[in-house]
Length: 72
Image 1 (tube, helix red, strand yellow):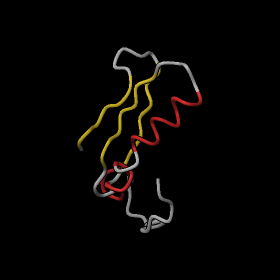
Image 2: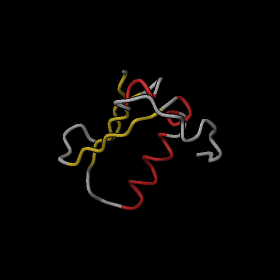
Image 3: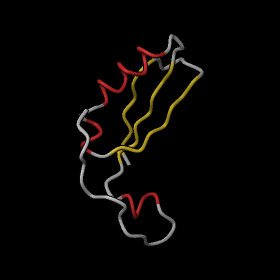
Image 4: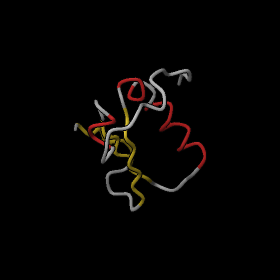
C-alpha cells in the first residue's frame, strides 16, 4: 500500500483514511473542508487501497458498491 500525507506533520491529531484513485482526486477539497471546520492542527494519512477485499477484509466479501456517485 502507498501512503499520502497532508496537513501538519507535527500535529498530535492524526487521521488515517483508506482511499482509492477517485478519493485521491478529492483530497485537497477534503483537507480544505476539515481546515474550515476546525483550528486544531491535524495530519491526514491517506492509504491507497487497490483491492479493498484483499487489503481490508479478513475474509472474502461481496463489494458493497463499486461506483462513485459523489463527486468532490
